[in-house]
Length: 127
Image 1 (cartoon, rainbow, N blue to C red):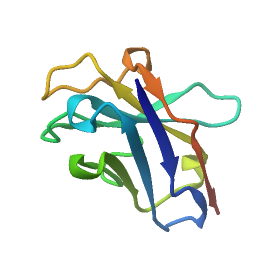
Image 2: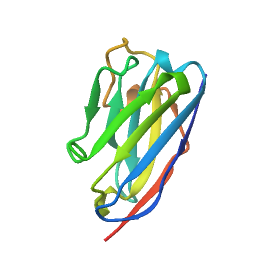
Image 3: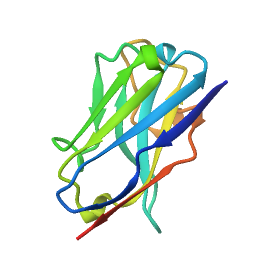
Image 4: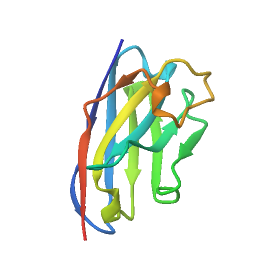
């Protein structure tokens, strides 16, 4: 079992930055890949970023490449999503998720591969 809690969301102006955190409890975070997804009203859930167990490989959705950075601190059981140059279209509820079924250097971009999800944190970017 893994429990995930997101934090760091809020309201920010376009061009600003936020850092989201995903704190895990239960199984040690060094044993599963972690992903961030987001869902805006009336839209499907979208892949944002993912990081492998060992932190060596990262993956990004096309819409956030070059602006967002995912990282992890396994000693703190926490994964971060640094979001820079935010746009109004980044407004959504952001979820972190844990995938227990991957090799240490792999992470998935598909939400169906993830086993545990947090409750989400709202990010609102004003124009």
